[in-house]
Image (cartoon, rainbow, N blue to C red):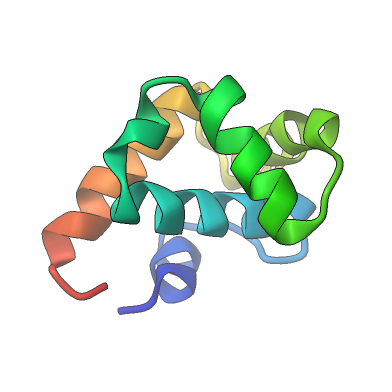
Length: 92
């Protein structure tokens, strides 16, 4: 299952800018778990670089996407939970 299909299955809507940020974040964390250690100082700059989005917009975009999905968790919790669930599928 692709990360995109996984997120759609979890109720995230791709119309939100944060969807792409979450998708890229899970991809990066799946490749190297060091990104989970400091989301805002390590992961967000990498997402910003790869998606060419302003760094300061990433957290807000992700929070809006999370809120629209009905989840009530922080961005750090989101990435930890989704990465664990996605990696448990074993198909990256």
